[in-house]
Image (cartoon, rainbow, N blue to C red):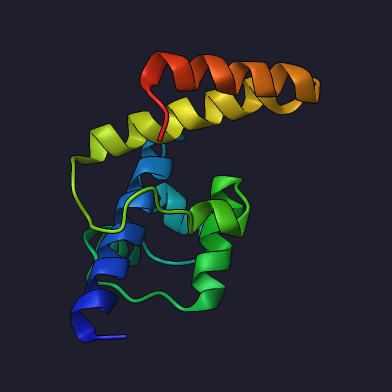
Length: 122
């Protein structure tokens, strides 16, 4: 992986972390306390300049109350857009997921078809 691609991944991870932190209404310091790191490191990670270890990433996921895979799930492959936009998107995805989580498979499929028709399929 090239140095530029690694920097892009750090920026994407930072955007994702910031969006989830803001969604949970936590300051950088509060998230740092919950995940046993400093608020300064949280800021560096969010700006894409910090390079967290796997242990730190796992601690961040636990502190945010999300699965590790959710923290690492990037909707984009390039760091674009504002933090507020990213936070709103994460919040909307979580609401949709919670809404559909306990629905029967047929209802989930119907909801998908409705969304696809409304928003245009791929």
